[in-house]
Length: 124
Picture (cartoon, helix red, strand yellow):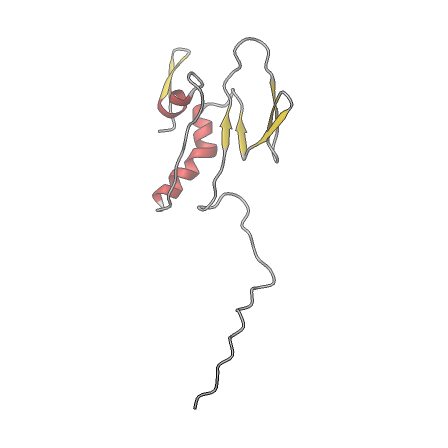
């Protein structure tokens, strides 16, 4: 006759869990690229890193990074998109999504355009 077995105790977890800082292949990052405001006045303000926020009227929105209108597409690629491309080439699922209203600069960012008589590459 066999003796009843007692349920085994769950495995113990380590007392210290290390959470990697910065982007990892499992991360979702939200980056905003602002375009110049039409007209002379702007109704939004941007707070710099380490906690970049965008304030519009009385609302605040937090993002991983905010690129101001003076940032070139090349710099946007080097600072934000290049890491996503590298992760894709390493076999990780990756996506760059451009979202915004008509005329906000999505096609300019992705495909490039001619700016002030010179051609500017897009992130693709």
